[in-house]
Length: 434
Ligand code: 0X9
Ligand code: CA
Ligand code: ZN
View 1 (cartoon, rainbow, N blue to C red):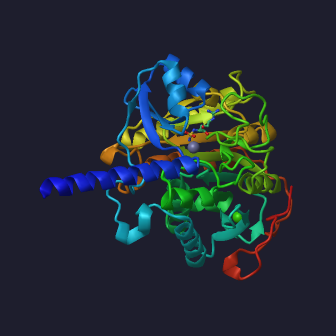
View 2: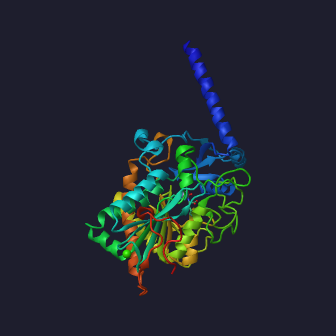
View 3: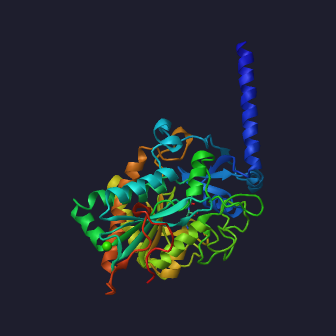
C-alpha cells in the first residue's frame, strides 16, 4: 500500500513535471538553471552562444536554459550541472500571507500604493507623475522629491531607476526606499534637508511593471517586458532597446525575438523605454543610476564597445567613490568597471544617457546575499542592508550634481501634469523641456 502510494505519488509528480515542461516549451519559456565553472573562456563561450546568464557566484556562472539551449550547451563541450533552483519559490523566508507571492518585495500594485502614500504623507516635498503606460496598461510612475515640488525650479536634477529586468526584484526596493528615506528625513536631517532643497531628485522605481508582475505570478526568472512578438514569443529586453548605438552589432543584443536579450523591432520600440527617453528629454539630468541585480558592480559607459568613453576617467572616479561609500557600510565590495568589461551589449540605458547627454550614468548591479533555499533571490531580510549600503552612494551622487550645477537663472515654472494625488488626468509630458 505504502509502495503503491509512493509509486502513485511519483507518477503524479512525473506527470506534473512533464506537463510543466510541456507548458514551458509551448510558451517558449526557459525551463532550468545550469552552472559552469567561471573561467574567461567559459564566459565568452556562453555569451557568444547567447545563453541567458543569471550571475556569477562562488566561482560558477549560472544561466537559464531555454528550450533548445541544452543542445547548444552540449555543443560547447563545457561541463555543466543543473542547479536545484525552483522558479516558483518566493524569496527565502517570504511570508506569503503578508505580502502575497513576493513577500516584502513590492509588486506593481504595492509599488503604486507606496508611491501614492508618500505623496499623501509628504506633500511638501513629494509629487507623483505618470510617465505613461506599459504594454499591458500599467502606469509607469516617476516620483519627484524636492522643495516646492509643484515648480520646475532652477535646480540640478538626478534620476534613479529600478527594474528594467523583471526578475531583479531588489532593484525596485532600493530606489523605492530611497524615496521613502528622503521623504521621512528631510525635515529632521540637515544633510537630507539641504539636498531636497537644492536638487530635484527623480525616482522611477519600476520601469518594467508587466514583467515584474509576470515574474511574481507566473515565472520567477522572467527578464524582459511582455511584448507579444511577431514569431509568437514574448518579450523585449528593455536594457537593449535604448536608442544609442541600438543594434550596432549582435554582441550581447539579439535580433531574434525569442532571445533573452532581444533588442526589439527598433530603438525605443517599447513604451517602457520610450517614457524614460521622454523624461530624459524633458528634464536636464546631471546623473543617472539604473539599478539591476546581481553582480555587485558599478558599471559605467561604454557597454557597446570596449573603447573608453570620453567620460571614462570622470565616471570611474565617481564609481570608485561610490564603491568606497558602499564598502564602508557593510564591508561588501562592488567593483567599479566599464560595462563592456562585464560583457558587450548595445542599446543599454547608461550608454543612452552617457552617449546622448554626456552625463555620468551608472548601472549598479546589486548583490545577492545568499543562495538559501537554492534560490539566488535575496531574502526579505536582506532588503534593508542592501538599501543601507547603497544610500550613501545615492546621496553622494545628488551632492556631486549640486556641486557641478551652475544655475541658469531661468524662472521657476509649474510642473505639468499634476500627479494622480491631485486628481487631474494623467497625461504626458511632464515639465517643460529645457
Ligand atoms: O545585461 C544587462 O542588461 C545588465 N546585467 S543584468 O544581469 N542585470 O542583466 C548589465 C548591463 C550593463 N551593460 C553592459 N554590460 N554592456
Ligand atoms: Ca525644488
Ligand atoms: Zn538587469
